[in-house]
Amino acid sequence: MKQEVLAEQLVDWRRDFHQYPETGFLEIRTASKVAGVLEKLGYELSLGKEVMSEADCMGKPEEQETKQHVKWALENGADKKYVEYFAEGYTGIVATLETAQPGPTIAYRFDMDALPIHESEEADHVPNQLEFRSGVANTMHACGHDSHTAIGLGLATQIAENQDKLRGTIKLIFQPAEEGTRGAKSMAEAGVVDQVDYFIASHIGTGVPHRHFVAANNGFLATSKLNITFQGVASHAGAEPQEGKNALLAAASAALNMHAIARHSNGSSRVNVGELHAGTGRNIIPDQAVLIAETRGETSEINQYVKEQVQSIVDGAAKMYQLDYQLEVAGEALNCDCSLDLAEILKQCATSHPEMDQALLESNDSAGSEDATYFMERVQRNGGLATYCIFGTELAAGHHNEKFDIHEDTLLPAVEILYQAVEKLGAKER
Image (cartoon, rainbow, N blue to C red; front, top):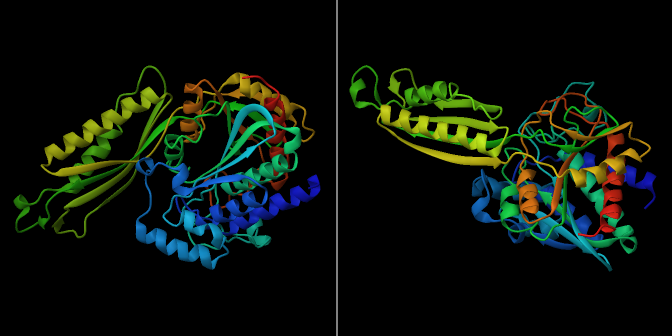
């Protein structure tokens, strides 16, 4: 496929995924279409539960929601041949291509999920102007994962068309539920990167300027996403207040004390209570309260410290108000520690690309959290190298914003740089 044709195909894929966004573990239409393309390209596919540990799926939707979404996917262009593999919400894909020549195993990760955000309907919003705005209310690709999925398919295309020139084994991992840091751990625990020598994850945007490239982004914080439920006893607030056990007060006490956790001397940390839901009426003592919270740490050890403090505070608040509680870990990620030897090769690929103005080896700027770190840590623990790179792009608005949009000219260079890395890494000895 000529590069100008591939460039058009990348835009078509990206706009299709953008128009039909799906949130974590519900990427049934997306995954089915990805699988269909990969099969035609000649990849060996492992799908769904084959590549995901059920015990390690965090924050998965209820069965009924998944069933309803399967119906929506089939009504909106899903590849019927593959829907059955993803129908229970295990939407991971690993595509493997064995070249004819011996060499290392190289893996790339691409995330597929969207966010629960209603996309802008304003007239100047480009997806609205060009008629590929999200067709799903309160759901949109506001972080670029539609672009990541398209880049993954573009890379798959280039690899398949040039496999006679390549060495080793290439694995393309299409991951569900990166938002909320929920999907990678289940795939890592299923062993999908256990034989990998080189692992590369990537992202578009994140504040990196257009036509700039970062080969090793170490700024991702370790994190835990926590759903906390307090269960008390309801009572009439005027007639029998002594009979009630107030879950709202326990939650409020916990929330205030969580934000007072002492910081750690070894690095930065974060804690945030983003939601508190409680109560049904002004004269009813609330019998249930739910906190949606998160912790973060510059290292996984610091995040664990903050998480343990939260657990202690929640336990204390429950005892103080004499009620029960449940604490669910709904998502988690490790801190990022890139392998600079691998990053140097990617930097060389980007430096030689005519569309790149600047290639930076390493950045430690804070960049939220990312669960690709589970893949990275597992590869590195087994003796391999791993990095997380960033393709800068012009953004219409920041990530997780209703007007988020990317510069589509970034798609083809991203594919070409990642492909060039396959060539360079295949020639190396491990």
